[in-house]
Image 1 (cartoon, one colour):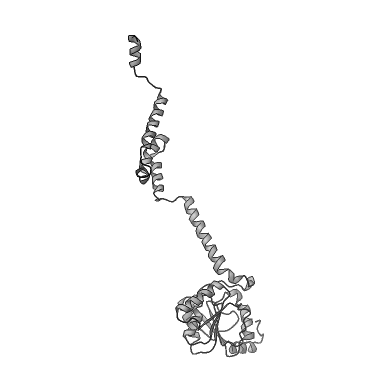
Image 2 (tube, rainbow, N blue to C red):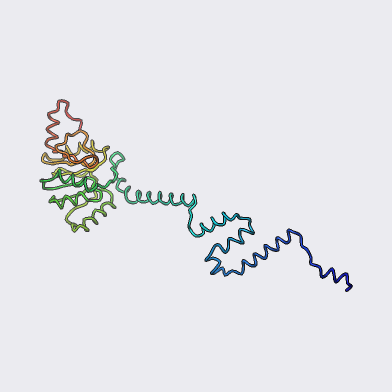
Length: 272
């Protein structure tokens, strides 16, 4: 080999700019592979972000956002939508599985939604039944709390009529928890088909849309000595004998004998 060939061989070969950048990227990839992916690298996402941001052109702010998301520190719009959809689905399952079954056997215009009575409403109902005894029935008894309180106040038998099987189970559980299981009755019957001719105390927490129809049933079937107590909403065509409470906690008492007498004294009669 002559001196010229030796000099050329000793010179450093220069690569084009694009080849040099590619070589650096390959070097970074090789360095990245040295991490222990079963341990250190995955335990700290920041170890992966630095080479990723340099080789892929990712901005540092984007890299920080990626790290936050990997650590569960942020939720994007899609995540919020998924949570909202899941909540809506859960609400529908509760409606379809718990509240709706009791409505399937009843015509639409006679359906009544379940809204539990609060403690003050129950107390007002009991005030209007104070001093009375005998059979007590709650039409559309829901979770059974009014029937349970009536039994505690001395009403026997105390019966609740409810179509929804889930609410009947809840009523039985409440009675068992209160030590009254077997002492009160919760029956799965349509309140529109129940015979009320032997009932002297009736409570109702029903929607206004069905109260006028209920007036006709009560007036036809109840004996003169019966008293009806309505909670939340009054019976639309009857004059109450007594009332107590305010707002949605108000309750109205109607004595059937007085209602019948008022209708007989009315020159126009009654539409119910």
